[in-house]
Image (cartoon, rainbow, N blue to C red; front, side):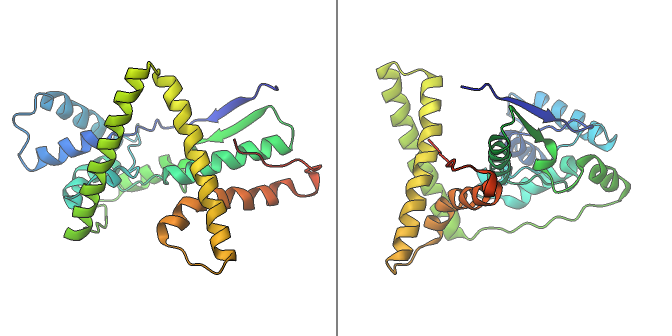
Length: 246
């Protein structure tokens, strides 16, 4: 098996990804509801340091889809993050993963042993330049779409079900002596398998005159994109090679 290496182009200004748990705490601090938080001094220190570095143009702290983890209070969440992000947004993890997979396919077709990845895949333009522009402006405009009470209730119920399922899986893995690395590999393989099955079922259902819902489409979409990208990349240089995802 040929050894493949990954070459990463880094941003000239460091980029930090702020965990959603920190942003939740910052939102509570802004509302004056975090006085009993034992981590309050550390969170405040982190916030102040990031803010100073961002305003000095020495650090990028983007809005990186952390709000997906919020079940309510989206305005409070955004208000806590915007002073640090300065309105800079990162692309979705699904988009970045797709870009990296396509670059791996390009390297495979070209028989290259290096896969070039870039911070640029995470942004639609140079984040350092966007930060400079944002710091020169006196204000940042951001839009927040609050969810309905029904959708929030549904999301909370789904989160609870997933939490219970993960807890049950954790206990089974502990009892069976399965290590973290082993389970992580199984989950990676399982995620690909589910998408392959969903894509196959999606096309079969359409071929038989059936319909589909948004969940079916969203689950099958990544594999559909990879298939289209493979056809475009391989072209006449493919020499009969097939795209195998396993």
